[in-house]
Image 1: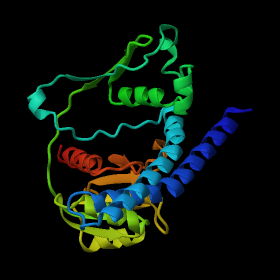
Image 2 (image 1 turned 90 degrees about the vertical axis):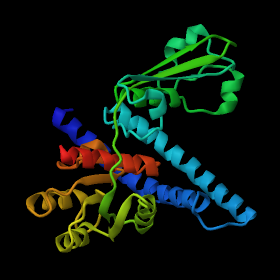
Image 3 (image 1 turned 120 degrees about the vertical axis):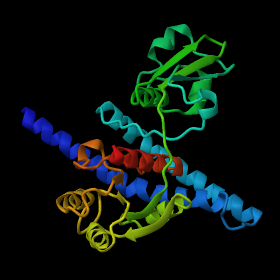
Length: 302
């Protein structure tokens, strides 16, 4: 088969993963996000049984999401398209704002890993043989994916273990400084109404005002009437998609300076030029979203 043919197959596969991700992960993430808001601080009071039932719904949704996401994430990592999504962790008191390498160590006193298997624990789909591991029904993707997550921002992941003597895992990450600006007006352009509602709640206390647009064309019209301080843009939208919206913004001198955060399930090969910061919809949390906003606002000021 020619190189051109292989390239077409690869591109078709990327489109397939992006479509599957969008159709399955987006509604699941909206369900999980709204459940967290319901049971979290500031939510309406719930009866004990209601609280229990909502938690069961959330647990089922997270289980389904993890099944869909694990293979998709590994596929992206294998193709070299793993994009780190840093989030804020309150370790300032410990670090004293010093530039350093942060080391996190987790140790257990479990069954450990026999020496003859240590070299293979980071291989995809490898599972240490044994009755306990068989009952766990794992996929053999957890450690390989954790390794790639550690390496994406320039970190390392090391594992030491001995049979029936426990396991120690050490994560080392480079230090980075963060600021915490508050943004005025935010425009969220996404065709998923539930996701827009979730994002609106996430901006509570961080943004002064949040506008919503169901597609890129409406978003462009709203920007022309009242330019926002920040735009959150989904790539996969009807009428005018996210890439086209960002291109139209770049062509308009009134809009080209507006910072853009892309929130999407698409792979990195689909990111448009001008997408300064990209956040995955998979398992989106308030902390990671606001961290992306801080990043793009900081880059815009430089």
